Image (tube, rainbow, N blue to C red; front, side, top):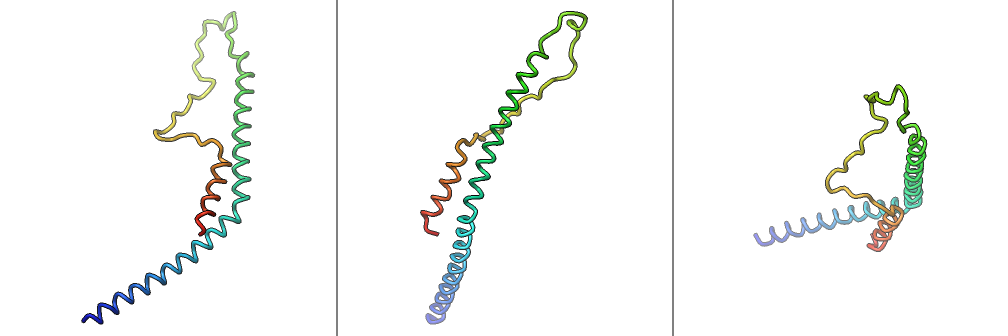
Length: 119
């Protein structure tokens, strides 16, 4: 009976080692793919930052252009009520959401952490 229990434990241990070997190979492949993707992710992060800057600049320009047109005119239209909005209401952030600044540093930190783990 004790031999049967020993064989069962030995079989489970061999299965665990085999599974650990398979997982290790998959993690190594994943880390190699992540290392290959690092430059592409960095460029994507820079493109996102550039896009955010462009959108911010466009907002500023549109507000400057819209400001003189929004001034009330003296005359027949002075007492008229406008029934539409010229701009959207600001969207409220969901609870617990924060803006990430320094995305390039965040991406670089991820790859440094992943590389330091030696996987």
